[in-house]
Image (cartoon, rainbow, N blue to C red; front, side, top):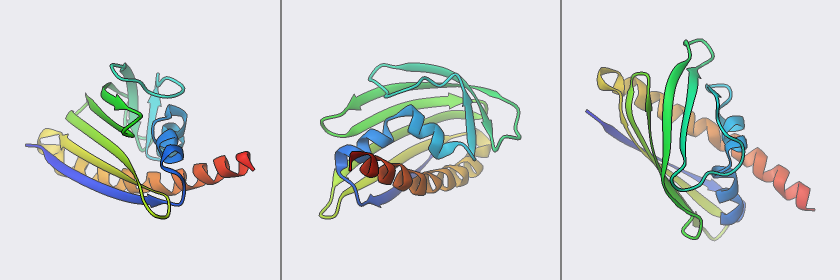
Length: 150
């Protein structure tokens, strides 16, 4: 049985800058490094149709697990992507990310459908926690981008 979560974060940065940080694998590694580590993740930006096979470790203590990611939709003009992922106990991790302009910057919306069988509730909790933890890292990365432009 799957469960869907949604998290929204506001940024004092342009939608294009937020999109850049949200779709860059190097920024992804920085935003998740304390919670999840990946072996075999590519560098740079994602693209539609991209298929990635990695090994991941939760919290640096769990044994490495094979994990497959596929970028199903990637639309920079709409600042939106969708991925389908899974591995280990996770049967499905369907992630939809959208960046919208706001009066003061941008809003990033993560919507994730999770199915991990009897562990779904645990992964839902972990997913909410992980996506919240990405926010302050992205804020820092966006500030560094601004400083680099100055």
